[in-house]
Image: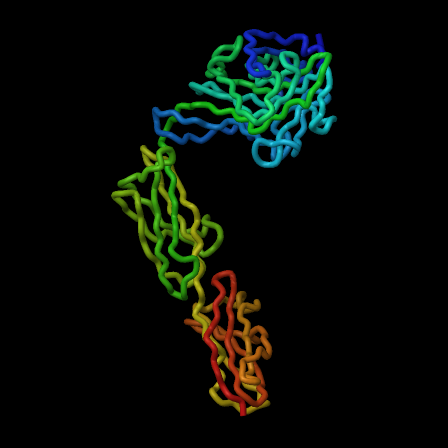
Length: 434
């Protein structure tokens, strides 16, 4: 027989009330609204198995669910009217929490009589869990021993049991439910399907501000199988180096659970000059270490992306470091204007760029030339423009400008920037037009 939300409250089972300082907590149970589907597949992000983070035969605490309500209520199935909605009126952390009547009533309320507002999530696989905890941060002001905020679990998505809180909790506090000792259900660890829920319910008379929840978290202690997880960090001593300059790289191979160095392993240093490590990655060298620390140095002529890779073995799983980008400047000379030129005669002058660039690169504007004129006792910017033509040799790219000059002292320099190099400025070349 279908039940209305109002009738759900009448099915609540209460036991063991403990009252203290105007508030109470009780072990409780409730039947979920029957309109909730029990066979719909869970969202894909819910059933992704958590990664192992500890050694074989060891255990690790894994977070199976977390919601701080900063992005809405999409992780939950909602029932009840008025029901839960996010609000910025109160928050345990961040900007948002969930308010028990926020779908129709703005906080601070009050909520309404005969209310039953549900939030459901799951199912979660606890078949391998040896312990689990459901927790939340709560701020709640309700009629004592009449209106309740409940933290629940279920193994059939119909009958929910857990703990309820009533009365004045007028500051944020952390509440938790031990899933090895749930009212009526006992230990739900070992179950392959476990649902969680938050329920706010009120009786037919007297209303207050209501309940807010934040940072709802489900954690479980799981045994790990297979190799332990490793982590690698990689740092470079400079973000930018000169053309053919040396960059010093330092790495460390770490046990992900304990944070200690893993000795006696080899790692590969790979690199690419594209912002994609696959498929254009190439092996630079294999590094050995008796301690877990690695050091090496390489000279580069172009922007280079470095990464350390651990191939994995029977003890530790495959691991990759962060990608360290080191930018290289090119080798750039200014246009070769003679030290003395005739004024108002157009000169073609060439400068050089190393390494040589491709024809496709030379069809873009990658080298700009700047001119300054010495006037009134100081250098004054005169004009700037991109190189007017390029040509390649086996060792360099040459660029040209054509310019005529008014009488006086001049200086010229170039700036180069492309996808392969950091911004590079040449030296100034000074000359006189007469």
